Length: 286
Image (cartoon, rainbow, N blue to C red; front, side, top):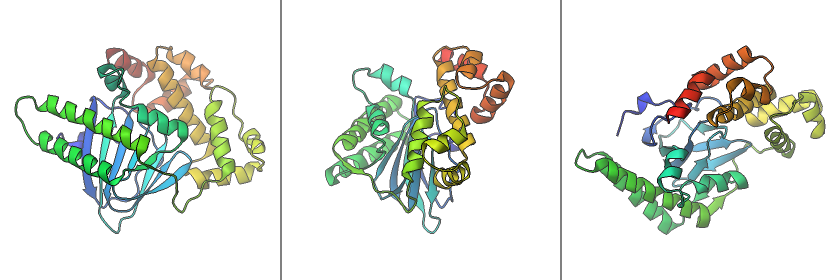
């Protein structure tokens, strides 16, 4: 396997997929963040809560967490015991082109639509999952003819098993100690459905029957970020998608509510680490 130190936990995946097997006593991950790729988290041991958008889940060993691209999330890790997990980054375009009829990443879309991200495999599914993970790591340790092809085939098997778990495994809906207020959930839905419109914090607060001050304080408590930061990050994500789809950067900025292009350019670079023009070039090259 390649050195994981060359890969950032945010930004862009420069491979078709990447497989991590990590064991450490790290503390809390960086604040809420997102990826341009889909992400699988399989807990092997340890204690961790995962906040995904407006829900917080307590993972148990062999739980499978599906985080679709552009989904804001973070991990809250208990440092009293080692945290061991498998994390897989997946390039959607690659798998859609590789097997367009298979729907290998369909599980992410379904999880996102249902807003149910955590699954517990049945015992037989767990055994199959463990066997497939072991097979991948054993193949990755070799440098013989056909190694990459073998890894690709095992990764496809792994995605099939994950899809089957998402369909027939136990859906975990229980949350950790942090409970999401229904008013904040409604506000999040409204924001995500109206990113191209003017979003006024006071008006959003009124929609969920809270004062502006109480709404802003509750929003920060529930999500870990401010209302303005959340809206800006979501708009930048939407703008990046429009740019990847071919829309000129200035038009994408305007459509996503940025009146000043220079301000958009700075915010975009701060968020993604590259400029809108570089993103457009990378998308065309890919």
